[in-house]
Length: 245
Image (cartoon, rainbow, N blue to C red; front, side, top):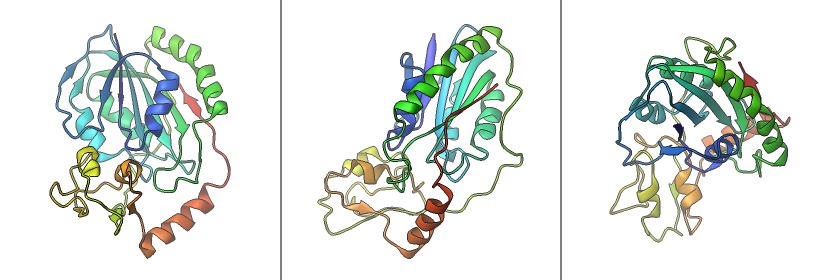
């Protein structure tokens, strides 16, 4: 059986995974009520797609991913990033799945709209991305048939350190409808006062911004302005999907 696990707060990661693997039992690691344990066998195949947050896997996604165990189960991993860099995301994901009984036979990177700065990589994955990912499919199938561990995995150990992520804030347009509370992956938004966010719990995934019907949530402070300018300079040249075997 094919399983496809993903952590996709703003939808881009899932889009990339669906292009590569359109069918399979979905495991949505984004859900706050995610609790099911999975025990996969050697006859199963697992696809995992995580976004790159500051060049690393989201810690919350890795925590939930630990509920999926394999027994010499073949796997394909994907790092999705907003046209800047994915740095240590793939190698961190590889190490975690490897320790959980999986044989990673292929790894990919793909580009989606930047979750914080939507004008970066806007509209991606686009038609060119779809063609690129589609061209990888027969190569990936061969790697799965062979069942050999990947030899070429980008990234460094120890993984890079990351700073505290910025927290979106609600403005006066917030009507306290609670949609952000319901969909927040980390439970950082107050149920009774959804215009309030716990900065310690917030992982900066921007799901609340994407889900808000009033467009009432945003990054507004000077720190975000500085981050935005720095990332825009690093993300000017179009990056393409890559396959690693």
